[in-house]
Image 1 (cartoon, rainbow, N blue to C red):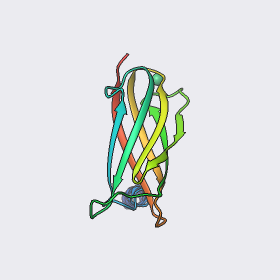
Image 2 (image 1 turned 135 degrees about the vertical axis):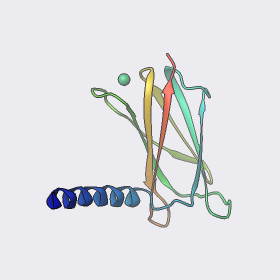
Image 3 (image 1 turned 120 degrees about the vertical axis):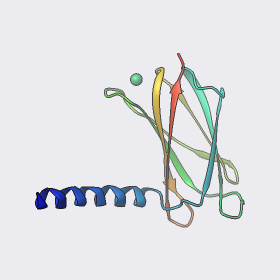
Length: 125
Ligand SMILES: [Cu+2]
């Protein structure tokens, strides 16, 4: 039993470490929007706005998007964001299926830290 508890504790610690390392920039505020605004099957433009502690635009981040659905067997959507103006990032992709999606925004900030955020949303047919 003691062994089992130890193994469980190790597993929990490993999980916590992994997520702590994934987003090293908790104070950075990320706002996102879509065009069309309501997610439905087809092409979409996604905008991100990153602001720092002071409310200033955070420029120079290298960001990419991974879109997964909540079921197995689909190729993920993979795309890069480009910076349109300081702190304003954009990418285009396609909602290839209606249903539950998990978007992961991941990248590197100019100071070298990793940013990772997840968005869960439903795509209408
Ligand atoms: Cu699917």
